[in-house]
Length: 160
Image (cartoon, rainbow, N blue to C red):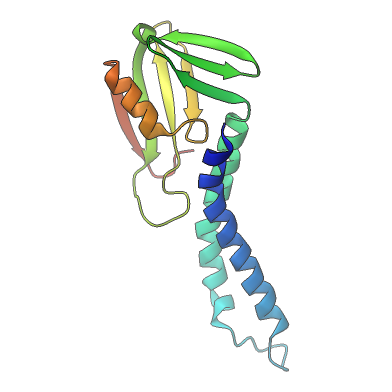
């Protein structure tokens, strides 16, 4: 997993969450003299809406990070090398039955819109999964197309 990919996906969510926290703290410290009256419309639902946008991205990023914490994927001419905890698994393109790329079905301006993962189904029945934090899925899609491997695009509401 590269630092660049990790930052690319985590940084926007972290910035939004930081802004929500700062605004929340500022709103609580600048209330009117009557403590029962909250003048800020932000606390009447805005905080909840922002949290609903940021929290799924943070949860998804944490899950993907834990799945691919020590995984690297390298495409070679005739094979793929997947290294997990210093154990190298070499997969020839001919041994791949199909590839599924799971991505979000609604691409809007949310911090986690481009999170996805890829599943490799091998002829021996084994399934291997890697996420967008390990390798840019657009790049892996191109690599599989070049090698003539069947790719299925799977749209999901939340690519967990």
